[in-house]
Structures are given as C-alpha cells and as structure tokens.
Amino acid sequence: EVQLVQSGAEVKKPGESLKISCKGSGYSFSSWWIGWVRQMPGKGLEWMGIIYPGDSDTRYSPSFQGQVTISADKSIRTAYLQWSSLTASDTAIYYCARPPEAAADGEGYFEYWGQGTLVTVSS
Amino acid sequence: SYELTQPPSVSVSPGQTARITCSGDALPKQHGSWYQQKPGQAPVLLIYKDSERPSGIPERFSGSSSGTTVTLTISGVQAEDEADYYCQSADSSGSYYVFGPGTKVTVL
Image 1 (cartoon, each protein chain N blue to C red):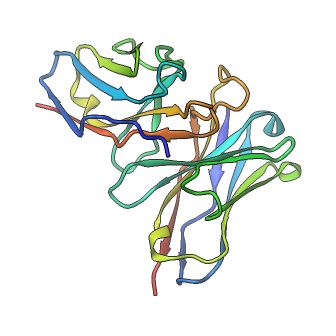
Image 2: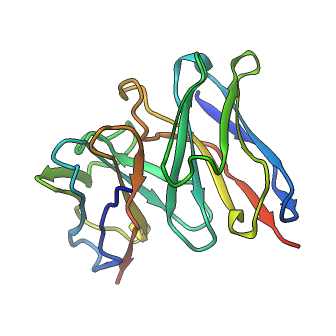
C-alpha cells in the first residue's frame, strides 16, 4: 500500500526558515515523482512543483519558482519542501502527493496524498 | 502563467446529473484530471487523462474532453457528492501543472 506520511504542524514567525517532510512507503520511492500542493485557508489547490527522487530532477510552477525549494533524500525515502524566509502569506496546508501508476514520466497529477501539514506564520 | 476556468458553483437535486466544465487554452494538447475535496480532507483523484477512472472511484463519475474544455459528469448525484471539485492540467509545453479555481457542488 502506497503511503505518504507528512511531518507535523508548524508555527513559525515571519522571517524564519522551515523545512517540512513527506516520507513515502509501500513503493519504489526513487522511481516515482512526488509533488507539493498548497491550500491557503478557505482557498483552492495550488500546484507548487514536483521532484523525481531518483535523480532530483525538479520542476516548479512559475508561481513558486524562487519562493520555495523542493528536495528529496532517496536514502531515507523522504521529500522536502523548504522556505528560507517565511511570510504570513505562507500560512497554508501543504500536501505532498504522488502520481498513479498509469502516469507517464513527469506527469504531475496525483492519486496518492499525504495527510497535509499545516504551516502557520504569525508574529 | 497558465490558468484554468471553472464555474464557482453548481447545484443539483439528488438523482440528477451534474456537469462541471473546465476551460483552458492548452486543453486540446494536454489531458485533464479531476479531484473531489471534502472539508478537512485531502483531495481524491476522480478522473485522469480526461476520462480514466482510478480503481475504487464509482462509475457515476465520468470525464470527457472537447477542444478547450474538459467536463466532469456526476450521474445520479448522491448527497455524499456534495464537495469542492477541481480540474487540473498542464501548460502547453507540459512544464508545470495548474489547478482550476474549484467548483462547489451543492446537493439540494
């Protein structure tokens, strides 16, 4: 069974850095893209980017390029989403997700989802 | 950057058919996907590659594509189908993906 387990909720101050994680199990972690999706309070889904843990090939949405960093450590089956300097507008739930088996290489739609990580940024 | 357009809301009576459209300039070239999200839950993939259904998704959910529009059809709507529905697709080059703004389906 494919499972994605995300790190717990975070409360941070503006200007602080943060790295949240997503651990995959039940499949060959290195062989499947993993993506990140943002959902701000009461708002819709936003596709942030995806990474291929096998070679760390990463693709970002233009809206998030330069704002966050997506990375992965295949040795511990974990993907990461990080910020160097948070702002209040980063307050959101962040989901990691994986495409279905039927997806072609690099396709960024998702069947398997983590439980979400709530990030709250407030002074 | 690329955008998809959906109606903000759709209302339907139980047992009737709901249709949600999603428009985007790159849809003739890129496949569309559909998700259902209920409050406090992660999204669920309903349709991918315009019309394919993942295992476990009820047959009453179907998808179609025509030109710059993809459509999600919910046949025989049930009360449990009340949720937000999002379409998703890629830009024309397939470099990145976007979600539509979402459609709230209300079962009357």
